Amino acid sequence: MADKDLNDLFLDTLKDIYYAEKQIYKALPKMAKAAASDELRAAFEKHQAETEVQIERLEQIFESLGKAARGKKCDAIEGILDEGKEIMDEYADTSALDPGLLAAAQAVEHYEISRYGTLRTWAQTLGLKDAVKLLDQTLAEEKKTDDALSKLALSAVNAEAA
Image (cartoon, rainbow, N blue to C red; front, side):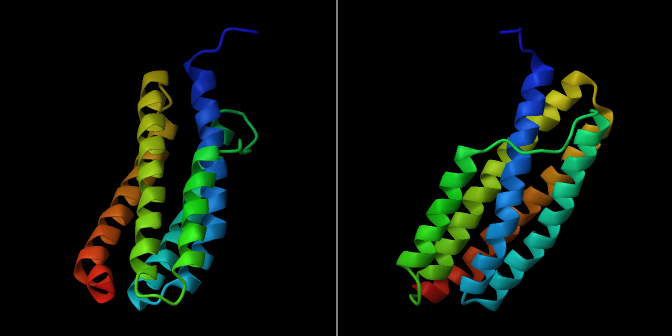
């Protein structure tokens, strides 16, 4: 097997987050539909629109590398999304559904923040200035979404379930 380097790791991780974003994009409408809180539903809908743009940014990075945009199955995001599905099934029509959905969404955000932060750092190391700029934009959005979800949990969703 040929020696692999940071470029290979960057590309593999880019494929991982591309796959993850596509799966998240498919899951968000289901989460929005399940949410009882109008605010939480709106947060999921807003993030789906952001996710679409984030996918486009990833495609721009692939293009800048001269690579086809394609995903690599990400077991981590599959597991996180499966937990979200379990919450929707096990807590449907209960007051705990929205806090559970919100927690599942934050698990997704934390995964994304970790991946985008790592990719941005590697892109800096590799001198991929365009990728750094695009990854910074997405990382800022993911952090903002996580912060908004935290505020929503504290201001409304958790209290309404208690």
